[in-house]
Length: 271
Image (cartoon, rainbow, N blue to C red; front, side, top):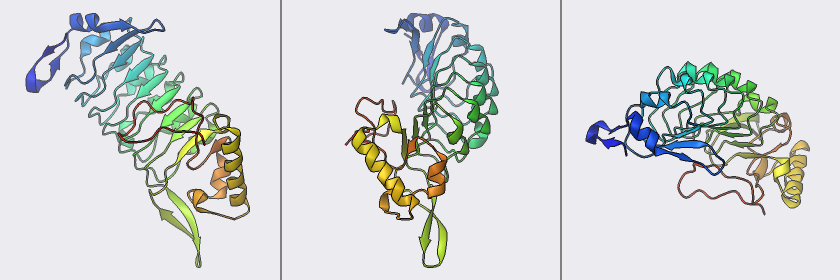
């Protein structure tokens, strides 16, 4: 086991890290160093060229090494619940990554590198619970992306690239200060609010009953009907994201929920 160093955090050595590697049921080598009080990213880990999955979540890491991109064997990287304020450009070299979790850190838009767009194998990207109000436009190149977590951030609108990611089936935008248009006696006004949760899912993930209900709601909006369920988005914006139902869509029982959620949040259910 890694040695404890009190207030200075846990000291991880190459020897202890090798002993902690375990095989996953699908045959991958996984190194779990979660919730160990680690304050500095152990650079010795970069020598573990056979590790496929790395879990450094729930630690106190404030900075990633500039050469994190040398960890080229990684397919799965979990850094949620640390103290990261930025991500180095070299992360774009991890072209084999399929899952990246950076939720619950201190990331701002300036701290996200354009090189995130090089991670074209990514299927899941979790950026929830940070301080983000925009994303690098290069993320539009992530054609394999299926799940995107942006919950608990500072977004006032959905990123435009959502409309061009053909494999994207889930976008979690809960608890953002989204702006939406609201018509009153004096015309259209922009309004901000967080009282509605926005969770986008693909039409194929809905049961027949819920899909019919969502389509009826969208038809009412097209006719200018409105209604509480649809005041988060204008009709024009809703047509932009083809195949995604909003807001508060419900998914089938067998659909995966986000690995990291706020305590007390309920899983998505159908009907």
